[in-house]
Length: 393
Image (cartoon, rainbow, N blue to C red; front, side, top):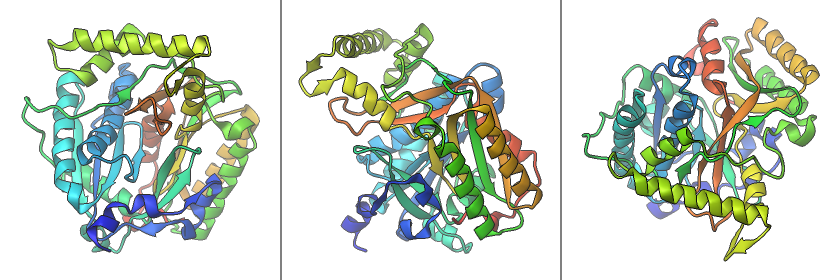
């Protein structure tokens, strides 16, 4: 594969439209040999969340995606948001730019959010040398947004090595800031409409039974899909706007260094007021349609994904949740999976909107009170799984 084709790898993968397709290996393509995974996460995110910093944790996780995509100069790269971290696959032409970006994010998270963020760049050749792979599929969330799904075990292996301190990227000097253009959080927490907002993680267990794990995932997806809108936590008409003083301060820290934030705050407030005013009065400004934008926010949201295992934040009633928990518990007893569940009364959205005039903006969903990070903490408390059992659908 020549470099120009390699750089277009993700856009050339055919999309699948039914989420159940995450278990079909026919939807996946191997990442090119000369690519690398950029991965990062928050150290002790559980402690930060318990201290009330869940919005900052989500913003830091999403900052990895925005910094790398902005640095490489492409939104069309495979990535996955994990609540307190993220993974982005980058082509050879973008590896050094991505390395500089994750280094700058580490410094920014420490200085602006008081969070310690790990970061690593892991070449594909090192992953494949372990007998694992990184397979990528492309799920069509809406007419304007698609998200990467990862399988093959390689992404999980890369994350585990990062946590061991391998492939680590040192933090950048204090004077360097990442380009976080487009990163924002201007929506109120999204309350449950059906029962509870539930963040679920299910990964393969020690049995290494790929067929049984695939059946488990299909069953859970089917149960959630029987809920209104498949358990989507965001109403079809979009979430409720909400820019608090804390949210405004957080966005200012994204946009500008200390001493230069008044202008950033004023701009954010004007954009917020203008967008909401256009939506309320059902008006347009050029190509921007306020009400359509809100419905696009809902349609473009990544409330479910596959990242060497199932991750989903859904709004389901008690009966469906009980069915999901029973399936997971039965599978765990059979060593088919390890799982974690965290319940909360609302979901939280973090956004990456480079150009609000275009409809390909992306929105990352997590539980509003710990979500994936606290679900993952439950995973850590269960029996360890062999590295090479990492997910293959």
